[in-house]
Length: 123
Image 1 (cartoon, rainbow, N blue to C red):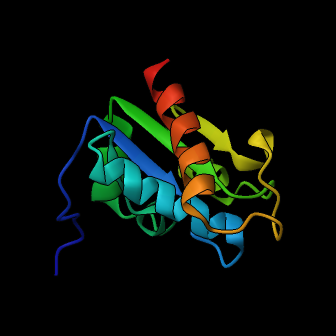
Image 2 (image 1 turned 90 degrees about the vertical axis):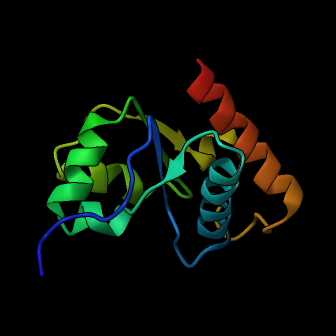
């Protein structure tokens, strides 16, 4: 089996926390929502962490990259940085009032984070 990505590239890639906490679930849902809306393409953070060459190459060549972290541990940001990816915007949900363990996964919370992400990508 070849070591390559069968994903298609996009000008804007979105990586998100998908952790077990409420904020991780929100981050994941935001990335999926942005993908459905055509704002970018959710991409494989596990592939970055696993240093899959095709995924790294696609990420490095993306026009824009957005990392969405649910909590201040910043796992998404750290995964990208550890893989040598430095050209990305970072949305830390705690910076917009989302607190781990106190942020229910609702349409409203997903909309708040999604709106901030769209604002960042536009700016």
